[in-house]
Image (tube, rainbow, N blue to C red; front, side):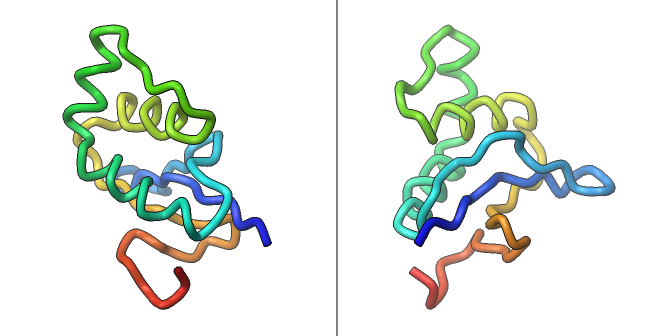
Length: 89
């Protein structure tokens, strides 16, 4: 079953949700978390014109470029927070 995963910026009130999904399944969560951990590298790469060539990772990179220093959370289409690993994976 698909469950769309989005990045959400909690440094704004109300939080800003990414326009495009960063994943479609729970098994995408480790990659999304890895991308969050590598935020500085992804932002710098994009600023130099190097964008990831992946349908879900590119929106992640674009959202991180727009929010390079903000508090970012991973939420699904139902508003459930998946930023930290849990039993749902």
